Length: 279
Image (cartoon, rainbow, N blue to C red; front, side, top):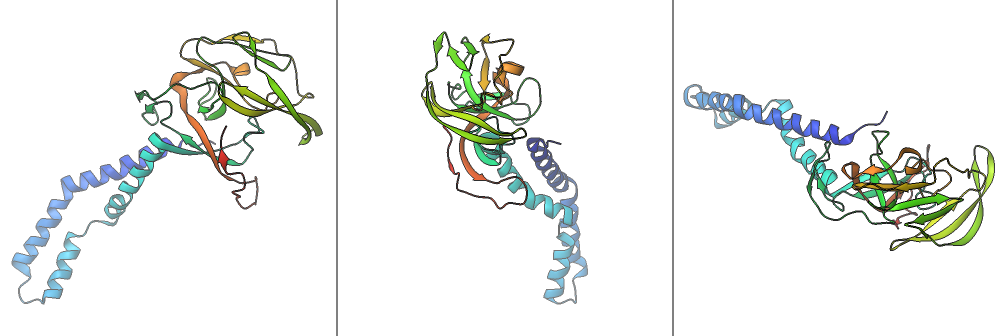
C-alpha cells in the first residue's frame, strides 16, 4: 500500500499544533495559577528547594503536551522543506533505465515548476514551465501515485512515435547508436540497444529492446493546452502517455534533479556510487 507522506506530515503537524494551542488556551493558566497559589499560601515553613520542586511539578506540562511542543517545530520544518523545496523519491520500476535504475533514491525540486500547497496541489506562485527533455515527477491521470518520466511533448505539440522513431512537430528526433548489451528479464537474457538522444537542450541515453517492441494502435498525439506528454527512457518497457494519456499541469509534482543514493532490492547496503545529476 502506498503511503501519502504529505497527508501524514500535515496530520501530525496539525495534531501537535492543536494540542499545544488548546493546552495554552485552556489548561496552562490553571497550572500557573495553582503554582502561584501554592507559593502564596502553602509554601510557608518549607525550604526553598521544596518550594521550587513543588512549583515545577504544579506548572509542568503533561507528557503528551511536552511531546507535542517538541515535535511540532521539527515536523513543521520537515513539512515546509518537503512540500515547497526538496522531496526524496525512490525509483520503483525500470521504466527510466538507463537514466534511473530500480532502487535509485532521487531528489525532486518541488519549486522548479511553481510553489504549490501540499496535498491539494493548488499553485501559489509560477516559477517556470516544464521544458522538453526534463525528467519530471507527477501524478498520472489513471492512478493516484507518483510517476517519473521524461517530458517529450509540450502544450500544442504534435508527438508521433512509430517504428521506434520519435517525431516532435513533424521533426525526427535524431539518435546515435552507442552499444548493444544483454539484460536479464523474466524471459531470460535479452538484447537491448542504447542510443544517445537529444530532446530540447537535454542529451540523455535511451534504451530500446527489440524483443519487446510492438506497434501500438495509436502512434500520434496532439497535446492539449495545459497538458504534457511523458515517456520513459526505457522506450519499449514503459507505461507512459502512450498508454494512459497526457498529464495535466495541476498534477505536476516537481523536477527530478539528482540521484543521491542507490539500494538494491532486498538485504543490501545502500551505495553512493550512482550519485549524479539527472540529465
